[in-house]
Amino acid sequence: PTITYCHPNGSRDVVDVVPGTTVMRGAVMNGIDGIVGECGGQAMCATCHVYVHSEFLDELPEPNDDEEEMLEETAAPRDEERSRLGCQLKMGSRIPAIVVDVPETQV
Ligand code: FES
Image 1: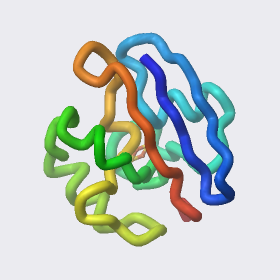
Image 2: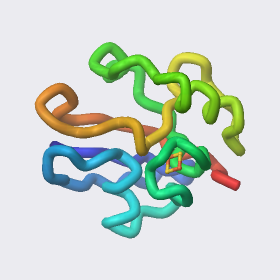
Image 3: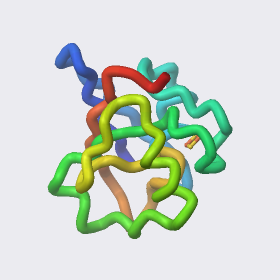
């Protein structure tokens, strides 16, 4: 699977990951700026907040209650449609590719 991270300054990072990798983990493992993943992927910190590009939204599972709660705590404003926690988005056959905008801030 392929994850594309678009940064506020207009630059992009494209990484290939093994199936089962989350959008948060893919960033942390590849040293991508702007995604922290402080809680290690437990939906408890919201420092992995991303804005998913609209064309990929249909493929994503709905946020569970934990994610929903943390999305109220994001440092950058929540976008009702596009905001997700990167640690809850697992790449694989269901999501073979995704493009996300990295927010201005996670803290
Ligand atoms: Fe903490 Fe995603 S890494 S909520």
